[in-house]
Image (cartoon, rainbow, N blue to C red; front, side, top):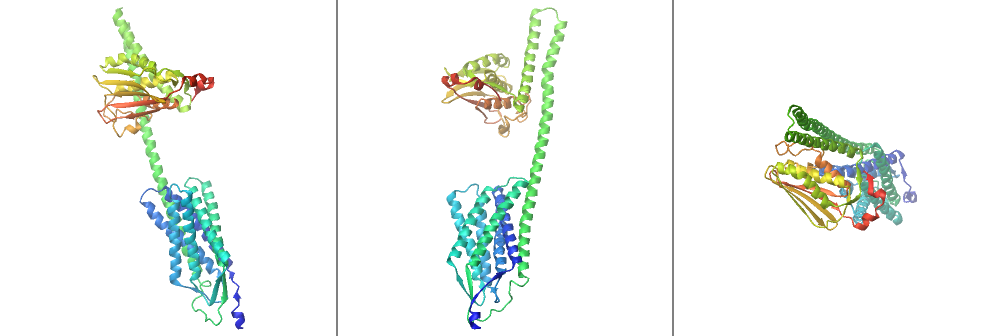
Length: 510
């Protein structure tokens, strides 16, 4: 009889509890991936609350999987657990989870850091498991199979590496498909955790100790403690996922409110644009109709006829440019702007535009100064569109410059780029408006408390045309009343490159 008692004991497992441990492992993995994704997208103080709560939820979840797996382990002797060691194993699981969430929430992770973190996390999970094994109190001697112990630790490290890698890859895109991918990843992670646990359990061999007294106390694997552990674990997971769902709902509501405010702002801009458009169209039309009526009433005085005809022609040109700008907005919206890619003498173009706009500047008593360097490098582009860019920049400067002010147009060569700078001494730009100066339908006169006319589309057209030529445009101002400077930078092209362009490259629709 004594020999039978001292023989090696063969364990068996409760299949219901084994299945419960697998479900808990998958749920713990899913919660971990969800929390890691949430932490990576959180930039406020709430981030650390999520990190602490998530570490506890994830750590208790992983520990519960191991504990339920150990409760599923049956030996033909009574068994209980050492309380302090059990608590220590819980603490180790929480620390391992905290490390995992902290690492996985980083914006990027080098391979060496990922590897070191996986080793640390794997060692912590292995420590949790074997501390739990050490907490087992039973009348038997435990021996270990070294190969299976090493294999279980290797599985823990590999599972940690895979978990961190998946957490870094599976960030938070929206959509049901992504949730299914995350569930699949959680299943793989859960399977790895389960594999580590049951490999570690298989590494232990139990032999009844001859003459050892039975350990008294409740047999934990047969009582209601298993149900309590599973229920408590499910409650923690429910709280974690419920909090995540509430946080996501709050985030979606904030996004919806922001979108609604943006839509209301867009509607206000549309109403302001339509009102401005009506005014801008009526003003030159009223002048043209009035001059035409006066022509019908006056005598055939050549000077008066010429003056009125010039007024009609000038306002007709204003209307034509206004309509062209509106058509350009439509073309750019639907991708129908045609760009000619040919050699352009930007210096001559600047001089021509300045000469055309100088009479208007003289009429407002604004000094117009032009400075260009000799032999400006060749620019590839559309002369008509580049002329439109220069005209819009100078006209914008004139609009905000009072009588007696000055506008300087400077063309310089900067290595691989040609820079065109238009500087005025006008009303300047409010710092709050400066980031929106190139936005469609945004008008700077409202920001400085004056009305100057215009639809708010000229500078947005400038930016789009410059970008179509491969260049950039920027604006700066020291503030209201300090003037403003607009700089256009366009890439240069060598003469040989210009000659080598094919017909398709020289003409394209964007």
